[in-house]
Image 1: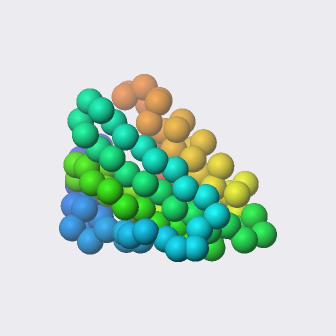
Image 2: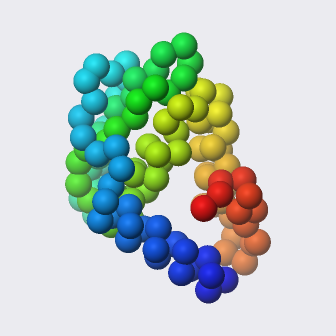
Length: 112
């Protein structure tokens, strides 16, 4: 499990220092705002869909290293995916983070 923790730390630190796809997207076809009043994380997500494919996705806002890294990773992962592929990735992620701590995660579903 220490390998996973080390990988996790490396990925989080890298995406926090160098967030991918950061900034407002114009033009866009969809947008959403997320705000966590408990910690102050506040982000906007912008998506340009064409023919059921995510052509471009970006985010703006501020928050802790984990939330910024998560947004950066999410935008990187979803760019170029179909709506159906994106929904499957999000379902796999939801399953991973809601599984019991002692569960052995299927890392092949989401990759690094």
